[in-house]
Image (cartoon, rainbow, N blue to C red):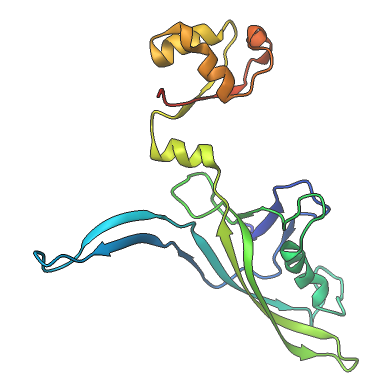
Length: 218
């Protein structure tokens, strides 16, 4: 079986090509902070806790780079030609006014129970160069990188609230019959139209296969 390589793909329209890391990490860590605040009381032995919200997950990896030997028959004279792929993810893109969002994949990504794919942004990058050629060019490096999860609001709401779901349009569907199925009221079709920014909801039959967001009824 071919070794699965950890790959990184920009999710935004930026002049950065997808790439794989030189060597897979030996380990990675996933962390998540959940905020609770305590309120002390003279009548209680411990404070009552109030939930203050959850933070995004963080993915941290240590990546090793070594170009002292030819890779795929090609000799690379400077390891920064590889590590600069990661550096580019920390730089502000002019059109976005921010660094890009990326998707990190590694191995089996068939279930959202797994850690990959992980969609996020680089929040910290440390490069350490440890071996050099006679001309001073580095040939070995260790990178410590942390990605912060970039959450899709609709996806997060669907996971938190099962009533916030989606529906794929089938031939013959109309917004009225979809509203009737979702809300038992066909007159609420405008709720679905507005949630999906449909310019011409009367011609929904032209969008077979479209996945519509069905928001929770307020």
